[in-house]
Image (cartoon, rainbow over all chains, first blue to last red; front, top):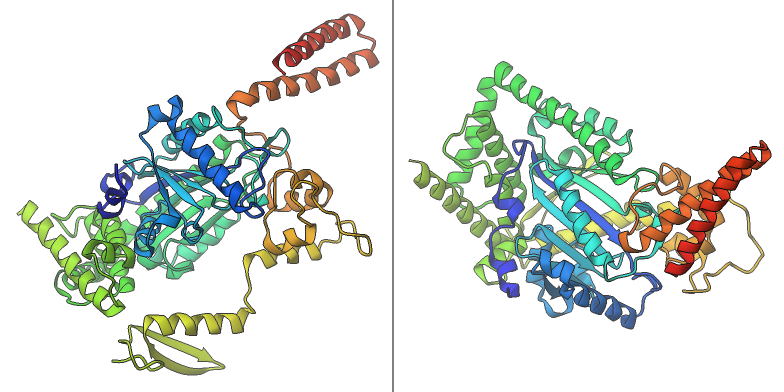
Length: 357
Length: 172
């Protein structure tokens, strides 16, 4: 499969499909940090070391164990233009840091559930992204990919310290498990800060997906484990899952509260946002995120009917600057992007209407 | 509306700055807003970066051995020094963990829940590791049984240890 398909296609599998509890949990992500034994980390690694890493990974993806899970494609950052790289970042396939390094690369499976960043902070960063609340399944898949790489690559591993990583904050399991959650009712009812600060007290971190703190754009929050050493992978995931379950319950309760105590206001807010998205001619990305979040809440509450729930995550990626420019095939000024963004959203909503009328 | 700063591009960022209670609204294009944002950020935080948190943690740690006036310890494999590490927050190579082990210990306890890995082992090379783990456990048990004069049990443990040691050797 050529590079083009990763850039043009509107959505990865986690964007197209829904998973368990996807009314609140948008996606589950697992990341494993691994380094090749007897090589300096990327920090101190010369260009020739980085080449060695790329070559080792390239050979590994052709080994039987990985070929069986594949096919995998390898995209080289040095060979891509800025817009294409931005699209990979917006689809969460690579980190913003990776695209600045010419010697870096990414290995992607066509379903985009599995991607492996090469020469990021660590030599390998295996990532699995699944829709909805599926952390266990995501870990299982990441674990298989990890085993398949380890079959042909010697990892830097220490019996006491576990997997050795460039930054000590990833040491041990090298595992970062995260859930992307849509929490509009907790934000609207003002409970979010209390919950977020409670979460940080149990070894987890929270950040906005776009924007920070309670100003998180689109009311999207990413909750992930902070500690990587001293707990097993299962304990880390179990802990995160346990906290997430409680947050889900709180969010559901807050939604019911809004619906019963504040129905007039919430209906107005949601319908207003829907109207603006359906008719506006210029739409900034910040406003788009907030309105899409409202519409998604409206769908979940049954206030808006005939629009698919996937619209938030799909449009939140499709209306990002890089993706817009890739789709229209031209570089655009911010003002032009606002016009295109508005028309993309209008088209999408009209499409939905036609399907359901 | 055109950007107030460069007067060329359309202003798409409307930015409110409150300095000592005085409110100023700027209408800027994306490029100027980014520059303006970076300036303000730098002025506020002095280009504060995550990595400086490290040096902060390390420099205020009284439990760390003071090594002033001695030539700085350097990793033999990659050449990284500890002060380099505190600046960039990342090690140079896997051996750094051994080189700087004593200085890392208190830090690890603070940022991690313990300093012992209890999770996954690499599958292929991990077989040997689990044998070694069992060996060290058996050796401790043998010591204990010798001390408590349970010699029959100690002999059994010794045989098991020999067997495992031989297995390790043939694997290597």
